[in-house]
Image (cartoon, rainbow, N blue to C red; front, side, top):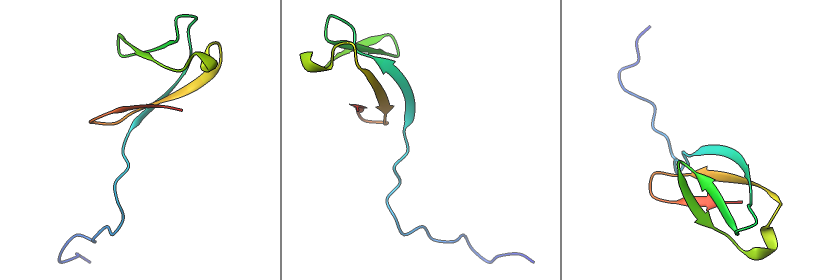
Length: 59
């Protein structure tokens, strides 16, 4: 049985690449050969990097 058209998706698409990392003593997180700065209070703590098409989010 064939469908006449695609099923519509009603919600927003939240696609990203995720990878675990840790914050260096220089207050940076490395992702894709780039260093992204973070707050000094996060030094030494594990973080998760979410790479979207238009931004990087560090959680």
